[in-house]
Image (cartoon, rainbow, N blue to C red; front, side, top):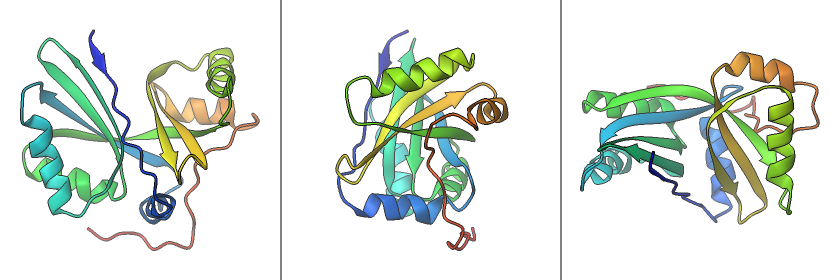
Length: 171
């Protein structure tokens, strides 16, 4: 499988605020779009997001045999999901883990070791960087999110957390 990984790194301090704004729930959600791998496809997808004022915080693209899956972390996930679906895209919305990484050699190794020891299989992963390298989170897509949460609950890991005092978006 040919895999292209793109990291859309936002370096402004407003990104953390945008994440707090959207993540009103206790989880972080990822939008996945199944698409043909051809010129202009990403343009069509991102046009929908731009027209709706949705900010892309992280992106991952994996492709094989002419088709691919484009995964986004955005600041308005419910709105993005609905608008992409309305425009006819094959789209899904699923919960992912966002595990804070220590910015030093071996930081990813430590998290990967812990996931391995807990027998948590990583389906997909990429990095989200907030605030000019002040915080980095490993976005982890796993096959059983609830099991992973239970297994990691008492480990010395920091997860991205939503703030309770933010109002829910109405769509």
